[in-house]
Amino acid sequence: MSGADFLFQGIIRAFELIFSLNPYIISITGVSIKVSGTATLLATLTAIPLAYALAFLHFRGRQALIALVNTGMGLPPVFVGLFIFIMLVPAGPFGFANKIFTPQAMILAQYILVTPIITGISLAAIKAVPKPIIETVYTLGGSWKEAIIMTFCEARFGIITAILAGLGRALAEVGAILIVGGNIAYTGSVGGIGEGESYTRTLTTAITSETSKGDISTSIALGIILISLNLSINLLANFFQRRS
Amino acid sequence: MELFRVENVCMAFGKKDVLKNINLGIRRGEIFAIIGPSGAGKTTLLRILNLFEKPLCGNLIFNGLDAGKTGGLRRRMSMLFQTPVVFNASVFDNVAYGLKVRGFDKRAIEKKVSEALNTVGLPGMGKEKARMLSGGETQRMAFARAIVYDPEILLLDEPTSNLDPANVAKIEEIIKRIRDERGTTILIATHNIPQVRRIADRVGVLLNGELIEVNSIEGIFTEPEDERSAAFIRGEMIY
Ligand SMILES: Nc1ncnc2c1ncn2[C@@H]1O[C@H](COP(=O)(O)OP(=O)(O)O)[C@@H](O)[C@H]1O
Ligand SMILES: [Mg+2]
Image (cartoon, rainbow over the protein chains, first blue to last red):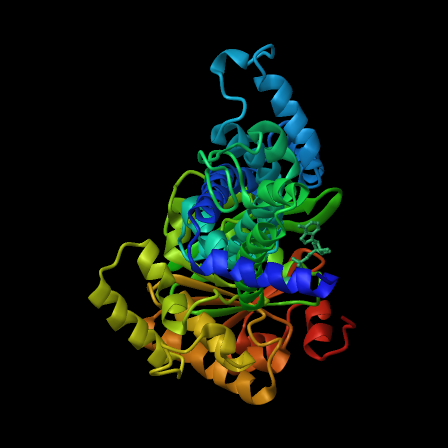
């Protein structure tokens, strides 16, 4: 079999796996979306109030927090993974919780990775709202609550872009969740290609293990799904960026 | 008779004195112009009147109420800033804003917005996107938004400085109409002398933070009391 044939066969088989709704692939995709989606949701709930506090309140430690957010935006995932691993292993300080190699541990890792990203981009969007807009709210009789709502409306596309950027980053991330999730799937008794059910195996971690196992078609199928998800998110983000 | 009384107001930013011992009474229903060169302190005075800045000394008496001790007075005024501000929404939502924050019901809002849009010559424009309006239309929308909840005083900071002559004439028309039809007291900061003559009843000349003269329109153009304000009126002052 030539190299081209090999690739061609792999792609054909990958599409077969996707369109036959292969349960193994579906369950991996499901874990990816569940973990990254939950992490992004929780990160959003933290990041937006945090961005508002950093934009409008003058409290002690504000500059330090901004520096922390900026550093956090470029945090290496493997470092976060290692840190949480050390915290959660049975011998670690939170070992009693028994959470290492669980989806919750993965959500925690991605939450830490994504929160600074959403905070940083939202903060930039909120700060870009011109001061006269806020003063106009006040002169027209609005209170500080209305001023906050107005900045949210004015910065809404920027904030949505921030959330999508966070989600994209979470879905594409592999280092942290590989370490704290363990890439676990329950394989069937046969253990053959396209069988099993994911527990902590995601699109990215599965690609690493399927590739090293030599199951190229499954890897390609997973890669196609991953790229499609990220592409859709990017298109959506572009759409909102153009509107803001 | 007097709506807004300014007593011994002074203001400084850092070491720079921006307003020095200002005394001024704005009468109900008049169009009062504050004129003076750039940097004289016009914007600062308007921002103090709209309670954005707290003066370093002096008192503001609005309708007999001490603004330093009475809450909610800003809601009885309205201010147009020098740079036009547009909310990223429809014209209707922009104009309706002051009514919504005051809790007016939907029908009252629709009625008042449509009246305000008529006053500024933008009837039926409610559905347009506000950011799509031309410069002149944007300023007219800002007027509608400022008067829709019937403020007792309208503070205008150089409302025509960014407009071409045709739009300047329209805005001046609108300013007079607002006062004549709604009885709104209007304070306008400007350095456009011919404009003052066209629309104002009285005028105060602000120079380097000092109010050097307060006079009627006839008075200031025929017998100005201060040599410096005479020079400013004649256009001899560089600014
Ligand atoms: N927030 C501020 N901080 C420092 N200086 C200011 C501030 N606002 C105004 N000034 C200064 O006060 C003076 C008066 O400004 P302003 O009231 O804007 O004058 P005008 O509106 O008549 O042009 C200027 O010298 C300006 O530089
Ligand atoms: Mg000014």
